[in-house]
Image (cartoon, rainbow, N blue to C red; front, side, top):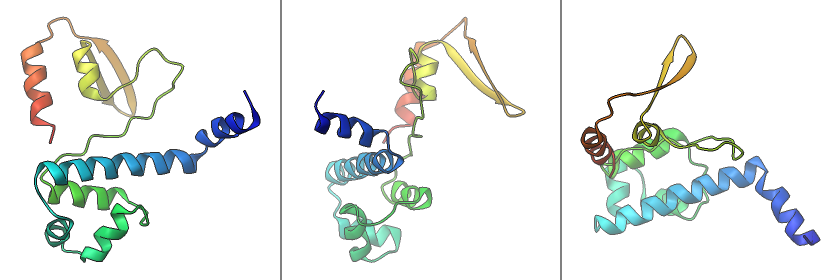
Length: 136
């Protein structure tokens, strides 16, 4: 590995890189959904009750996106937010709760403790319905 590749690998571990990548992922989804819904940025601005200039700042990546802003975008687009996944890349599997459900695993949180257990009678049809209802 040369110095450039080594620096790139180090940069990818930076919280700034990870934040920028997460924002770009959100913006890519927003762009895709706007296109799918034939909605303009101006219409998005109107639904969010913000200026078109603010939407332009967001879409250029010039605005630090808070979770509240992402939620407002989701509401304006009539979509849900898929929770970001923080995971250990050395682990065998990581995914969102729907993926865990598909693997017949129940993840629950009681009194600040997370428990994971195998589900014996998993209904694939209900899983697919749940997944469809929660996507945009």
